[in-house]
Picture 1: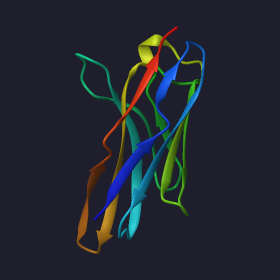
Picture 2 (picture 1 turned 180 degrees about the vertical axis):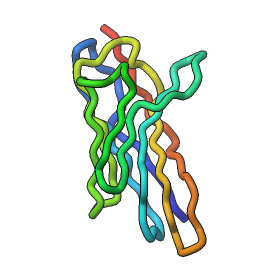
Picture 3 (picture 1 turned 180 degrees about the horizontal axis):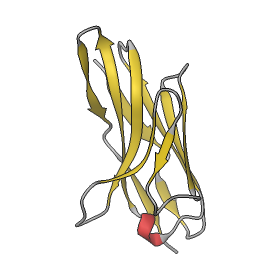
Length: 120
């Protein structure tokens, strides 16, 4: 059974940094695009950043220049380096991944989320 587990969230002061990790486990044939999403209270879940299997990246305008997405294909793990954090970055951060577990079995998986709180 495939699982995605986020870690690295927590409480940080404005202008601080955090690094989130998303580790995958289970029987995996290949992983295509992976992404980080976030959901703040009372708001819809939004895409923060995504990275393809060939490492092409895409960022929300609100995080460009501050966040960096990366992945280690050997470890099936994705990261999100978050710098210059702002209170408006406060949210639950979720990772997702487009995973093929066999030739005819491919779907999107989600992690359980990790809380990021930016506050003084």
